[in-house]
Image 1 (cartoon, rainbow, N blue to C red):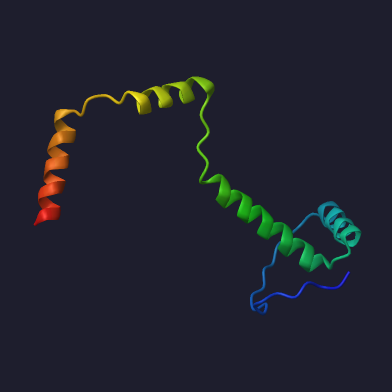
Image 2 (cartoon, rainbow, N blue to C red; image 1 turned 180 degrees about the vertical axis):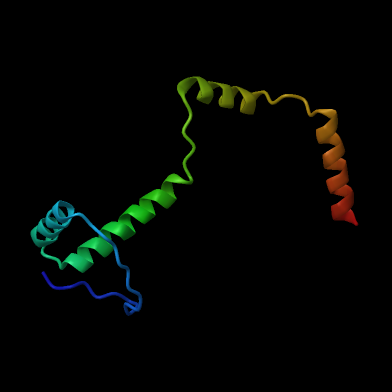
Length: 96
């Protein structure tokens, strides 16, 4: 399989220490995919980074927490005195 071309030239280098067994495993996987070791590692790191950043945008709630969240959305509590003061201060600041 030919090396994939990228829109931007490769200008940076990463070095890492790796155990021999892990390196052998990664080399076998790269060969199985038909790509170079470097291309395989870069693609795997890029995919892992994208997944990690995606996970940062997901909020996980238990079933009980989901029910409580929905109940609060459907019937929110009355604003506290402090919230009313903050809203008034914000409105005053915005109006100038």
